[in-house]
Image (tube, rainbow, N blue to C red; front, side, top):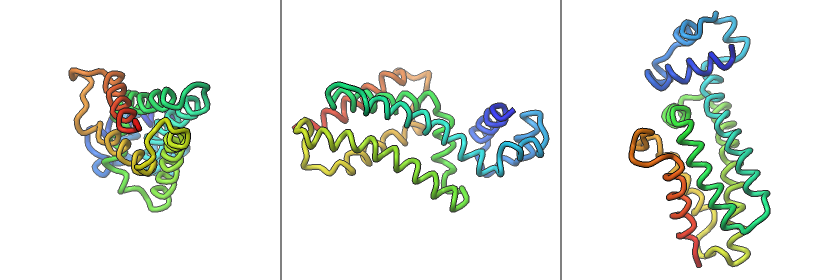
Length: 186
């Protein structure tokens, strides 16, 4: 039932927007009562938060595997950069909904989401710092700036990427990762 609520909320938020979708519409589409929804989620905000949080949890889990793996830092960063694009594209509706509606979250939820995203970015940044420290990457650009630039591009995927377009998510991910690594060459 929880997954059905999330699926219907995602579909409706993508079609109508977060602000234009009522709790009643979500529960009707999911075929449950409001009481059932409130058993799983405290509010519509919680649904929006969970839509994004499930993608972020997946991405964090995968990033940790790449970051903790053996091998050259350039290969690990390339794999992580490719993966975040692929997982964003694979969950494009979730990402589009979230970035379009994030500002409408309650202040405490918004603060929590920003902290979760910050942890992800910091873990990604640590790979850049490792490469800079080891002399593999140029160090004249602050690692934080590199990460902000890269994720600015990733967060815009929802504005232009189409699954039926000329490139797959994997191809876009590889191109983004290549651009990132090329920009870091000493």
